[in-house]
Image 1 (cartoon, protein in one colour):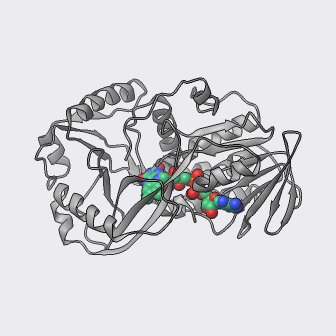
Image 2 (cartoon, rainbow, N blue to C red; image 1 turned 30 degrees about the vertical axis):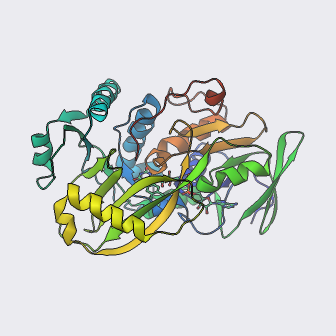
Image 3 (tube, protein in one colour; image 1 turned 120 degrees about the vertical axis):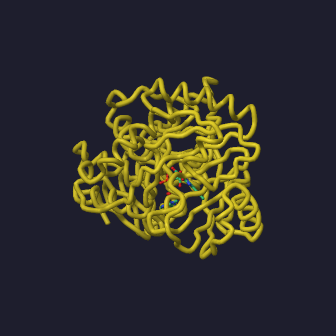
Length: 379
Ligand SMILES: Cc1cc2nc3c(=O)[nH]c(=O)nc-3n(C[C@H](O)[C@H](O)[C@H](O)COP(=O)(O)OP(=O)(O)OC[C@H]3O[C@@H](n4cnc5c(N)ncnc54)[C@H](O)[C@@H]3O)c2cc1C
């Protein structure tokens, strides 16, 4: 492992590898990434890997729209021959309450103004897309056929390989223990494998990012929630799009291999990665009501991961004002996989002090300025 680096990235999830790749692509030498376990150990390897552009805030729409452009051309962008299994089978979002339905109208208007051609559907039109959907009490749906999902392990691997090809050093099994700060400037990093001298550190530690913040004496405005998810045995394809309901708080998709992946999100500030039987029971109740044929599926695996929540459910991609050389790519609030390609580019812009590639406000200062526009459409 190098003992000197121009930039050290903490975290080998999708955010860390995307930042590493984009820095190296921009010509930055001596980039080092540190991952305490293995690549995708955190939320990335535990996520649904859904990719939707149907958001309720401008920032999330732009980040997702630009990331989709990259996912669509990932082999050319990364110059590695790894199929990330990106499939654009759409997202069908269900509205069961007036409040939700009104919000969908606003969201679709915003999305269309940003070039995301989502549309509103009647319950019958929704049934044309998912014939076995239970439309009882359904007021309507929103749909965009260019949304989809990918394989989070293969996507992380593809970015990591691309970064390594450009000279990034990726160290797995190396834990960051502390960060040396002198006169409010980053000086280096203490790891389980020795000290690295550096003046730039990126915190991309997902559900552990608060702990990294404490190492430089900063209390970050993020917290972690446990979210649970399961996979079933594979069956023939019966479900095209990701189906999502904010009032039922669930999502369900079928992967290219035939397994169903589904989850729901009680807002639990639990510091545990254990999955529970209560989740299995509630998930089964909700999904079999909305998508009745799922009652015939057998569950093969369930697990849990952290959502790293920000106050407005939009990411924090920012310098840290209190400590020079400390950068933040945190607070992805349940949608960091799909935003990572664009986030890597923005963090590269911030570190190199370039103008931001897109007109988005993701700096940490927005909370102090009281400029919070909360993302309304989350599970
Ligand atoms: C159940 C579930 C479903 C989800 N579904 C979706 C979805 O459908 N679509 C979507 O876009 N997003 C989804 N998400 C959210 C998404 O997974 C995350 O936002 C995203 O993966 C965050 O990536 P990351 O790289 O920032 O963090 P992580 O993937 O958590 O990576 C952080 C890494 O930092 C490492 N680390 C931590 N501390 C240290 C240390 N001290 N030293 C070294 N390394 C350290 C960890 O080991 C970890 O590998 C879901 C999340 C969960 C939990």
